[in-house]
Length: 306
Image 1 (cartoon, rainbow, N blue to C red):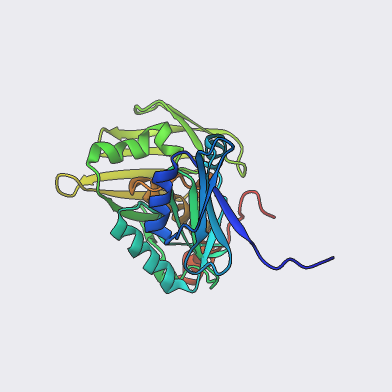
Image 2: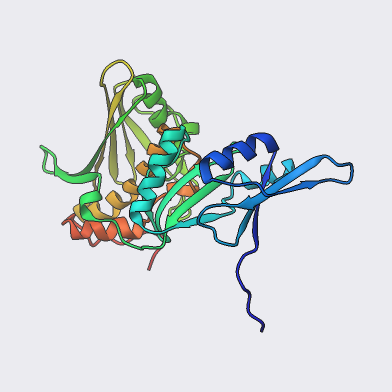
């Protein structure tokens, strides 16, 4: 077959052309060289070069229906040179006040996700592929006083305790980062229903303890999940997640899953765009290998995998 010579144009739908033109100019450096009018002469689109895209043009076109269809779909991923460039873009977005995800490791490479004024997710990714370094892991295995093995993660969020409490108890908030959909009777002895995880069957658990705004623990499968909240000043909260394991050899497997899920919670807490389904903002496989390399107990089977 004949060969293609490249991509001529990337067209992104917008609702407000003036707003989008300004935003894409400030954020990506779009230089408008073309304007497109409809049959009545009304300006409906613009386009032009963007630094780093070579001959590929970036176009913006007023298309409200298309915008609605793209808000849960990332239509374009922009490549950057290396991992340092991803960090530089994160600093650039911070300087402009543009919310974005943490810099994460994903199967395509190092990834940064942000959204345009219409909420359309945009990706920046370097082609340099690398797994998660063990030093980048945010959790650690611990042995509790009763001898059981657990994996523990600590986060500090720029939100008051009441807001972080909703992150871990409100089903609508849990849907942004927890691996299953949750319906919870929030009282000691209350039933919790878990569903929606394609790797696991629906199940129920039991609330073990509740101390409003401070502590929640519940049984999930054979594990016990504990969430402990502590104020860190007036507007900051320290969250400790402890997964008390039914079997020690699940430590690497479960810790890798929490790395993925908590990266999605970090994005949610930072006001970034919604994470992909099941919180997969970083590669589970890369996190798992890093956990094994770091010495987490391992060997348990992985649900949904042979």
